[in-house]
Length: 386
Ligand SMILES: [Zn+2]
Image (cartoon, rainbow, N blue to C red; front, side, top):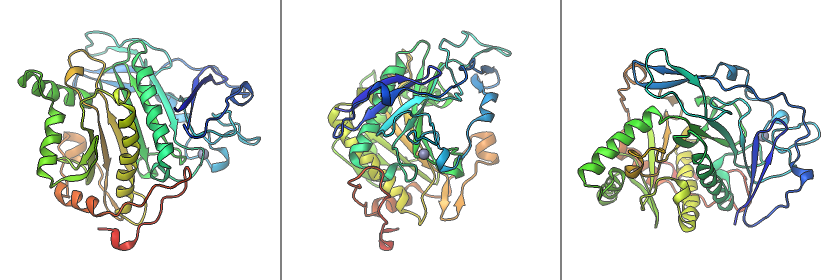
């Protein structure tokens, strides 16, 4: 069992230690007390309703002052030392989750105004959390041991359950942005969890399609479940198949690199996975990240996005947990930028074929996971690259 200890930082923010099952760490007042003198937390920013699109936009101007690529000796998510009183008071940890000091949403909780129209605003309620995957400042998720990856899965699961229970929350979104090329502001391997007070635009589109399919099937089938079955049957876009999870490049992939990882059982979110499913998830997720990193000589920037069922009575029954792992990388030295067609019209043009990307990902000889936490990923022999 993962060891879970919740504490409070000097300004009242919650911080939770998730310690690997195999190495429980006693968490005492001495190692959990934050001795810094922090200013009081601010009021939430604002959400404004965009009547042109029926979408909420969060206005978070206060985030302009947030930490940007600090040097390693001032990293806010390394363990605390005498010279670096970081966000994490302990001298060591495995995985830690804490409320973001510069949140886009929160810290106050509540609901967005009902029946919004042009000019409707409200407080940016919700919660933004940071998930540090390792105490090591360098490396990446793909270099974590399987035991450590399993602890991260447990943290995602526990936070999904806890955040879903907060007042006004409509969607819980665990994600990782990897690589300065896509706007990462901290090098230390970490992810984030946003708890929104509304169903996000993308989740709304996916949710509506899923609900239509579910209704047409009289509630006996889900869209994601049937796509998974069709992809496994076809085989041409499959990347890997496990006992409880499979991954494929979607039929109409938008990004040069795009992988969907789907559980074989319909579950709404990470909190609904069984222990056995979480064990396998730690393994297959590492497998996918290693495949992605083996395609090119340097690490590939990516966005890893967990699509969980919105906390919405209409959308939730038809929703199906899955991961969308995407990268704008289209060559060793080229990134796809969202330009006119994509950014202005939302009309994607993909320069790769999903079938050829799947073939390249399948061909990777996946290096074994490192035995010790957070060691660098093993180099892949040149011949293993497609
Ligand atoms: Zn660090």
